[in-house]
Amino acid sequence: MKNLDRYGYYFIAPFWIIFLVFNIYPVALTLYYSFTNYNGSGTSEVVGFANYARLITDSYFLEAFVNTWKIWGINFALQIAIALILAAIFSDLRVKMKGLSFFRAIFYLPNLITVSSVALLFGILLDWQHGSLNLVLLNLGLISEPINWLNEPATAQLSVSLILTWMWFGHSFIVVMAGVSGISRDYYEAALIDGANRWQTFSKITLPLLKPILLYIMITSLIGGLQLFDLPMLLTDGIGSPEGSLNTMVLYLYNQAFKYNNYGYAAAVAYGLFIITVIFSAIVFKSMYRDQKKQARQV
Amino acid sequence: MLERSEINNPAPGKLSNTSLLPDEIKIKKRRSIVKGIIYILLTLLAIVCFIPFLMMLVNATRSNDAILTGFTLVPGSSLIENYHTMMDYVNIWNGFKNSLIISVSVTVLTGYFSALTAYGFAFYKFKGKNFLFVFMLVMMMVPGQLGLIGFYELSKTLGILDTFIPLIVPAVASPFVVFFLRQYIQTTLHPSLIEAARIDGASEWKIFHTVAIPIMMPAIATMSIFTFIGSWNNYIMPLVILFSPEKYTLPVLMGFLKGSQVAQNLGSMYLGIAISVVPIMIAFLFLSKYIVNSISAGAIKE
Picture (cartoon, rainbow over the protein chains, first blue to last red):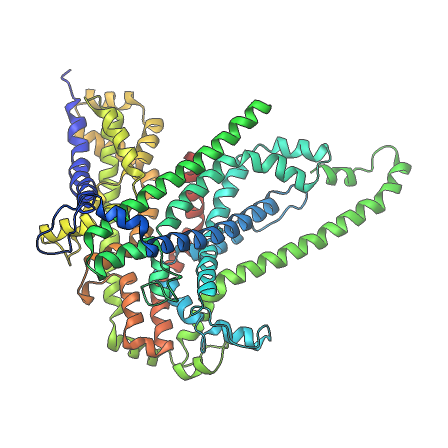
C-alpha cells in the first residue's frame, strides 16, 4: 500500500495558512509596533522600549488595571458564591429540590444575550432621572432620592460588577453543577449516615472535590474579565466616565489605537495586558496546585 | 431514601417507634418549610434574571412620555409608532442580516475546517506533527486582543477593511475547536474503520467526508452552537473593521443606536434592543437543554 501520510499535510494546510496570516502575523506585527512610534499612517521609527517605559509609569493604565481588577473581583466573588450556594441547594440529599433544569435555564439566559444589547438595556434602565430601576425603587419606598448609578465612580463600578454577576452566575452554576454531579453519591450517603451536617458535607466533601472545576471557572473568568470591554464602552461615553472609573485595560487599548491613533503605544498596552494575564493565570494555577499537593501529603 | 424507608416501615418494635414518630414529623414539617422558603428565594432570583427583559418588552410598546413618567408592567399601544421612529434612523433588519451572514459563514467554516484539521492531526503520521499541535495549543492561550492592532493593519494592507472578509475567513483556523474535535475523534473513530474504507478503494477525501464527518457530527454541532453565539455577540472586531453603517452587525448597530437620534425616544430604543434580543431568547427556548449539557461537557473534559 502506498504511503498516505502526506495527506496529513493536505488536511492541516488550510488551517495553517489562515492561522499564519490572520493570527500569528498580526500578533508578531503588533509586537513590532510596540517598539515603534507608529501612528496609523506615514513612516514610523523604532523607539526601543520607550512605549513600555511609558506604560509602567502611565497613571491611566494603572487606573485601568485597578478598575478592571475591582470590577472583576467583586463580580467573581458574588458569582461564585451564588453558584456554590445554588449547587449546595440542588445537590442536598435531604432537601430534594425539583426544577433544576428550569432554574438552570432561566439563570443562564442573561449570558446568551449580546453584551452590547445588555449594556444598552441597563444604560437606560439605570438612567438617573427616567430609568425604570430608580422609578421602581422610588415607588416601593426603598430610596427617597433617585440614585445616580452611572455618574458616581463607586456606583458605576458596582453597577458593572453586578451586571457581570447577573450575566455569569448562571454559567458558573451550570459548570459547578456539572462538577457536583461527577462526585460519587456514595460520599454524600456516607456523610449522611455519619451524621455530618450540611456545612460539614459541603466544606469537607463538595468543596475539595470541586477544586479542579473551580480552577477552570476562575481562569476562564479571569481571562475574560481582564478583557472587559463591551460593557464599559457602551454603558457610558466610551472613554470610561465617570472620572475614569470605567476605564478598563482593553478600553484604554482601543481608545489609544483607534481614537488617538497611538498605534505604537496601544500595541505596548496589548502586550502589557497579555503579560499581566499570563502572570495572574500562572499564580492562580500554581496556588491551587500547591494546595492540592499539600492536601495529598496530609492524607 | 433513607428517611422515607424508616417512616414507611414501622418495623418490628412498634412501641419504641411510636415515640420516635412525632419527632420525625416535626423534622419533616420543618424541612418542608425550609424547602418552601428556598423555592421562594429561587423564584425571586429567577425573576431578577428575567425582569430586565420583561421591562424591555413592556417599554418597547410604550411611548416616550409614558416611560418618562412612570413604570408599569402593562403594555402600551405605541409599538408601531416606536417601530417607525426607529426605522427612520436605523435599519435594524439590515444589521440582523449582516450578523446572520457573518455568523452562519463563520460557523460553517469553523466546523468544516476544524474537522479537517482534527482528522489530519489524529490519523496521519508526519514530520513536525507534535510540534505543530503543541504550538497550536500554546497559541490557543493568546487572547484575541493581543493581535488586534496588527490585524487591523493587515486588513488595511490587504484592502479588506470595511468588508466581511476579515470577520469570516479567520474562522478557518479555530485552535480550540480543532483541539476539542481531535480529542473526540480519537476516542470515537477506530483506525480499522479507515483501513476498511481504504481497502474498499475509497480516496482519503472520500473517507473524510463519508466516514469521519458523520462520526464527528455530534461534537461539531456542540462546538457550532458556541461558535455561532460567539460570532453573533462579537463586538470589538466588527467595530474596528466596519465603517459603513449599512454593513454594521447587530452589536455594532446597537452602539450606533445609542449615539443616534433614536436615543431621544426611549420606546424606540427599547424596541431596537428587544429586536436584537428576542430571536436569541426564542432559539434558547428550544435549545436550552442542549446548550446546558454542552457547557457541562465542555467543563468536565478540560
